[in-house]
Length: 333
Ligand code: ASN
Ligand code: ZN
Image (tube, rainbow, N blue to C red; front, side, top):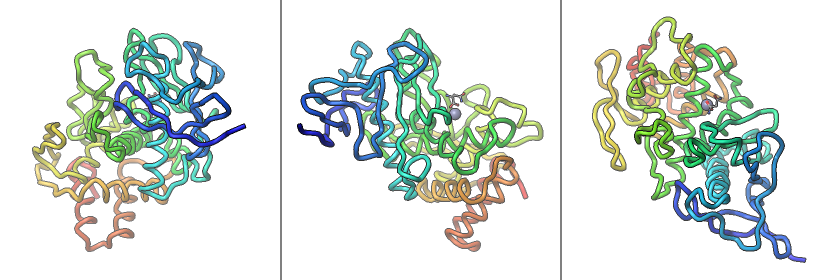
């Protein structure tokens, strides 16, 4: 009886038509990714516990691009897991969330009209709600990358999920979540410095978060001040998101992939960006070799400078850009 790794087709909600790695067993195909540790995608069918049922069918085309088909959200989730796996492998040489080749698993159709998605370290699994009216599943690529990056943070720095370290934990997920979106280079969901811009979580077409000027969401911090650690971690993250944008793209106005950005600096001085690829390397090295559970913004500055010094030298333009970008978000020496 034939059993093997197959390339199927996913008709996703947010990323158009994509390839999915699936498994054929006899006359049945399942959403089991044999090229990436065996990552499986399950249908909770509106339940909220257990694993539900593994997506299985007699052909290898998954979903129809809309919520009328239960496998559409599964196609997005399976694709998101694959792109997240590949992003970490190709960008940092990281072999899965734990760097040991172990796959996580994904669950879609959690609960009813559940407007969130979450990573859970205890099940080593990813869960997606269907969004408002069960019509806007939380399965966009940057959201998938954001959530699974919580697993990477747990298995590396272990940044505590409160206070300034919590903001750094959230920002790490936004930074690598958006990194996954850029990496996938998908024509339907292009790279940007916005989070969740396609899920319409606010009902008015605006994204969940902005990295160029985080305060555009009405709540996030653009720059550091004493007491910022008392903010919700999804808002104190703004400082590091803004740092990452400045380090990547520099200050001022810019249009990338049709999106307009305009990033201010706290000190009014310009920052010259070094590009997203180098900014990602600096953040990853800091996360995995410098940050600890209690790292705050001042020590994130020290850690990223140390990482930049090791990668590019302390006299490099990259090192100087890290200094300037932190100054741009009022995190000083
Ligand atoms: N989607 C949320 C997040 O990853 C879930 C949570 O509050 N942890 O931030
Ligand atoms: Zn998060």
